Length: 104
Image (cartoon, rainbow, N blue to C red):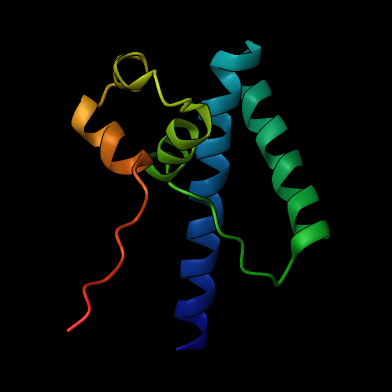
């Protein structure tokens, strides 16, 4: 059972390394081997600095929502909707003040 956990952990690390390499290649150019080498160096540094910790990586959707809220100025709903590829109604929902719960 412990061996299976180690295999899954290594597969996850390998997957993450591939994801980093896929991001690095178009951003910084270079060969597949170079981007893979850079990804492995990043993984090594992350292990040294963060080894044993759980790290949360926010989803792109959450980051987009946070960006919309932070960029909202009260008059730019249409602009934000177009910029972030969402409806104006969605921007309004994200940026409107939460309603008070109804009292019974």
